[in-house]
Length: 254
Image (cartoon, rainbow, N blue to C red):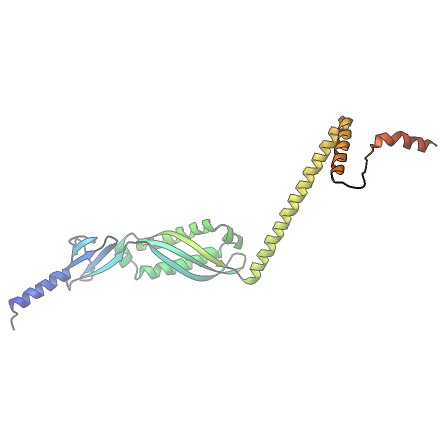
């Protein structure tokens, strides 16, 4: 049975339509011809319009945009034998579409598994205090290690951020007690420092007064003014010990 000219024209239009592919700016194409990686495709691997051979070529689209991937919470035993639950987020993008398709079956799944195992490995070598205080350094170590592992797949890991560190209840109480003890220690140190500085100032004042006895008399007068300002019914008049010394000496000689 011969095809009519209209049928042939429709078939030709269908083949041409299937052969033209349009890729947006953020996508690239990996094309296989008869199962082998095809090169020299008209239009390259995108973006824009590329031409493939229908029913012969197989095209796979690869996004070049940055992917934000959540790492599920992982149970980690730290170096000081504390069990914590940690989750993170990984930012990565494909830089070589051909390797991302040819070298690994599913680069998204593989990157996720690599991030989970690396997270447990790196945090398992860290102390709990380092995990809580040295977050930036741990993030940098995670990014560097994961990026080295995914580089053969054409995947570039740009950043890794540890999000939450969930501690056991007893460990949270212990840390709270430690923080409270540290605050009390600082308060005592500050109080002792204040007492020490006050004693130094009193010693300096005593030294000044000893060199100039008139300063003590002026201080007495100032104290009287302050007492009188309070409208007290009883007024205490301070008498210098030096004034009473001759009387005390006369009483002792009798």
